[in-house]
Length: 490
Image 1 (cartoon, helix red, strand yellow):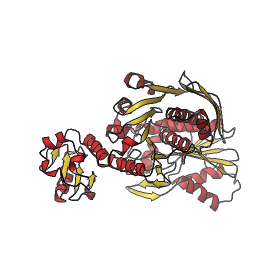
Image 2 (cartoon, helix red, strand yellow):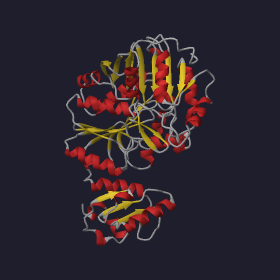
Image 3 (cartoon, one colour):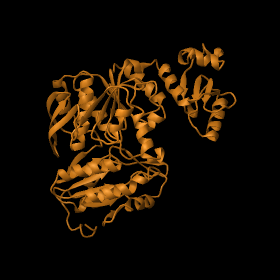
Image 4 (cartoon, one colour):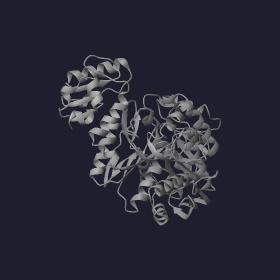
């Protein structure tokens, strides 16, 4: 694309870039490894020395233009590099985002499930849909890896253009707090923004819950979205009413809401309830399990109604939605149930364990760990929650990253007072817990969900909880092997 079609006249004039106006730009990039003579490089780091080094490399590689927040030689200094990067990427990729109806799902928990469910309801009613989030990018029969829950602007806008060219009409995407404050989503005009909840997570980055909450809420205004949908039962989410300047539709179960559910019944086979969606009453039977998935279902029904679906289409769409990969997926292991779930925050773990407790009269076991080099404050909380809501706890590795396994587990144990098992090897932990579980028991394996790797000391090792369970099943006798409970302290 020609330079002057990407950058506005004022920017070109202020920075004396008239000589570049007619030049062809082949790439906008934030990655120094991708720089060529026909590319524009945006240095997004706020670290001075790091930025200086990267801009020097960009100069050596002959980048057409270098943009930074610092005043280096042969570099265009701007006040807000990330915002300019976002708007430039939107222009470079033909503002394809403007041709799509984009829904942004934000919140600590429920983003992936709600995005998936909305996408499935639309698809089952004949709509062409793209989904962007934790589990990947899906559209027009394609499946792509997603580098982040909410990718950077270059990835996003290239994907939007590809989706548009493939005939996609609706895009449902997760919007993380990191993406909001790092302005990855700037220049996107969202049709709807959804706020599921605000509970503790990512305080390693945001510092305080107040900062984290402010980051989430900053997405919900007319600079980003046309209308909002929010859970009225979440205390921190209620703050949206004092910050949001667009119409808000509420959903919930406990408090009066525009969209609510009654007669809720959950089992291992799914959930039944009666939904009132803005005065439209719908009997719902869904494969999604648990009370928190009733919330996700209500949010999804709200979104799809706002997008124009009829009552019949809403009911039909939700009835045939399958559980999202890695979110309360149930495996029947010779009469014992293994639940694999991505829950990796205190609230997420509590919801999964409370749900499991309602689904069996037998015991609930849990295996979990915490990610290394992430919010340490939640570790002891998760230990406390685990032993409160489960009959027995096994602590294991999640993604240790650059921390020592024993240090992470020690942090979790600070919130625990009851006997428990420690087995850092995740597959071995699952096998040990299955060995002494009995028919009707539920074993919750939490924290990784659909992830296909385990990150240790900077390397990603192939690992998946589903594969581990199936491998154990193949290696072991499928009949219950008793006598292990006493050995492991149950």
